[in-house]
Image 1 (cartoon, one colour):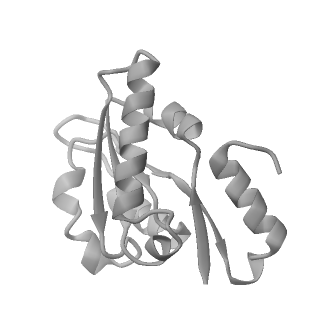
Image 2 (cartoon, rainbow, N blue to C red):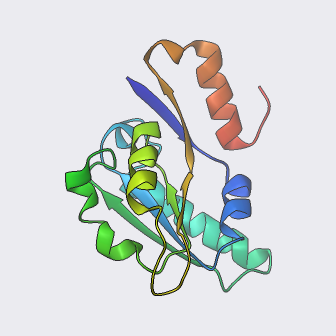
Length: 148
């Protein structure tokens, strides 16, 4: 079992503001079930980060969203490959396995722009025996930007 929670808007804004073009990538399996990184959550976070950047004086940062079925399997990542070119960063809302798979696949020089896309974990995850009441409360508090 995997439980996930997206990082706070403040934390995501700090990550995104360093880049010109960012792709928020959702995953359609485990993080969708726990309402942390599916298509709906990616759309909400993308909109919130865009609004936050605009209010902070960074209206030129491009934030796009997409969701694939599974970020942890190469067969599904093939559908994402054409979209990745040209992005400075990919903010993955997948579990740790999905983030790692994206990083292994896409952390390579973008020959057209001469840059290396950065893959960033945009959610925190807990797996199996790590899941306790205190760990869930801490994960939720971090995503809401409050202390437990």
